[in-house]
Length: 119
Image (cartoon, rainbow, N blue to C red):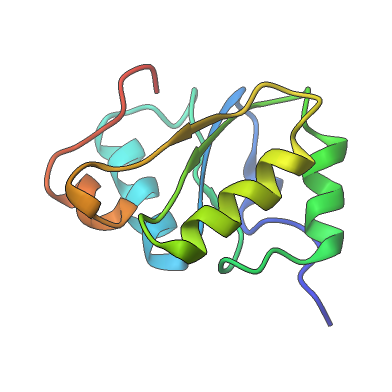
């Protein structure tokens, strides 16, 4: 059975939601959010991999105007594909896409001290 909603989406009570591709990316993002005491403003969510299922894309489309989606992609071909699918689903909103520095995955970038301004 395909995953129908992004993991952790039921926890969204904020307007800004960084979305990442993988589980470890989300876990590290959630820890950084906790460390920075941003949990009232920011909620980390992930899509369980680069191949986003149709029902999940539908969820993104339905919520595209409700939240400020920040897509933080992996710096590889799968990350580019993931970004395209989500940006297409979020076309009615205004998603922001970020790529971590130095060709790092989001979790590696966060652990090295990078955190996007504005989040």
